[in-house]
Length: 272
Length: 270
Image 1 (tube, chains in turn blue, yellow):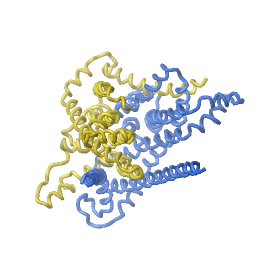
Image 2: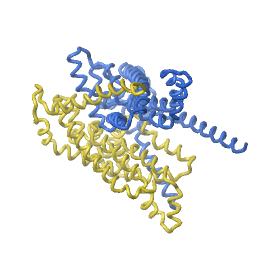
Image 3: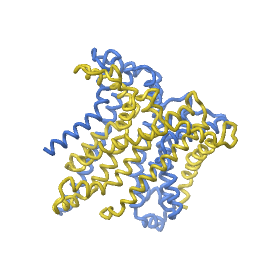
Image 4: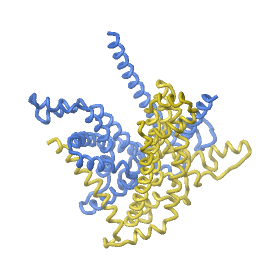
C-alpha cells in the first residue's frame, strides 16, 4: 500500500513536470495556430523556424557568446583557483566571498549593475553595447562557477607534488602545466561545461547588457512570447528538448560505463 | 608567485562585480544630475504594496516547493541506488529547458481557450479565468524553481547514513517518527539552501509575472525592469529599488541562517 502511494506521488510529480512541455511538443505539429485543438499534422513550423533569419542569427550569437565566455572564464577561473588556494586564510576568505557575490545576488541586480557600468563607459569611451558587453557579463557570472568547481580538486591534491616537480628542475610554469593541470583537469572540464550551459541559457543578465543591436536566442524567444502566439516557439522547444535529452542520456551512459569499469577493476584486484 | 595567478580574476571581479554594485548604491542616492538625494529611497515607499506582494508570492511559492519537493526527494533517496540516478535524471530534465519556454508553456495551458479550460468544458464546468491571476504567477514560480529545491534536498538526503534510521526503527520509532526525528533534522542544510535557491529568483523575477500575471500583478522585478528598459526610464529610482531588494534578501537570508544556527546542537550526528 505504502509503495503504491510512493509510486503514485512520483508519477504525479513527473506528470506535473512534463505535461506543459509535452503539450508544447504536441502542438508544434499542429496545422493551425491553435493551442487547444489538433487539426492536422504538419512540419511547416519547423521549416518556418529554420528559415527565420532572426532566430537563426540569434542562435549564432548565443553560441559565439557562450563559447568565448566559457573558454575565457575557464582559463581565468583555473588560474584564479590556483592562486586563491595558496593564499593565507584572510585573503582567501575575502576572495571566495567576492567570488560568491554573483552567485548569491539576484540575476536582475547583476544585470542592472552591469548595465549601469556599461552605459557609463559607453557614453565616455564611444562604444556600443553588444557582443563585447555580453561576453564580459557572461564571463562575470560564469567564472565563479568555474572557481567553485576547481577549488575542491586543489584541496584533494597532494601539495608535495608541486614541490617535487620544482625540486626536479621544473620552473613554476612547467610545474603548473605538467603536474597541477592534469591533476585538476576533471574540475576544469566540469567548470567549463557548467559555464557553457549557464551562458547558453541566460536570459536576464543578457537582456540588460545586450543593447539594441545584438540578440541572443533567449532574448529572441522572449520577444516572440510577447507578441502573438507563434507555433515556431513550439517547434524550437521540441528541438531544444530533444537536444537536452540526447546530451543528458549520453552523459549518463558514459558515466555509468565509467563507474562499471571502476567496479570491475576493483573486483579484479580483490580476486588477486 | 603562485598567488599572482589569481590577480587577473580578482581585478576582473573588482571592475565587473564590486564597482557595478557600488554604482547601484551611488545611483540610488543621487538624482539624474548627480547630486546627493534620498528621494529615490523615499519613493520606494510608494511601492510598498508591490514589495509586500512580491515577498508574499515568493514566500508562498517557496513553501509549496518545499512541501512538494520534500516527499519527492525522500522517495528518490530511498530508492535502489541503480534506479536513483535514472529517476533523478528524469525529474531534473525539464530544468534544462530554458525557463522562458517553460513559462510560455503554462501561458498556453492556462488561457481562456487553453487546454485546461477545454478539458473542464468537457465535463461541463468553466471556463475559469486562470491566466493573468495571482494563482498563475505562483504556479509559474513553483514550476520554474522547484528543481532548485529538489536538488539540494536530494543531495543531503542521499548522504544520510541509512543505518541511523534503521537504528531508530530498531529502537522502536515508527517510520513517521524516524522521519521527523532523524531525516528532517539531518536534512536542514538542504532545506536552507533549497529555500534560498527558490526564494531569491522568485522574489526578483519579472518574466513570470509578466507572462502569467498580466498587467495587474506587477512585482519588484517588473518595477526595476521598467526603470531601466521600459517607458519609465529612471535608473536612479531603479537603482534605489534594486538596493532595497538586495537588503530584503539579505535580511531574509540572515533570518533563515539563524534557524540553521539554533538547530546546530541537533547536528552532532553529521
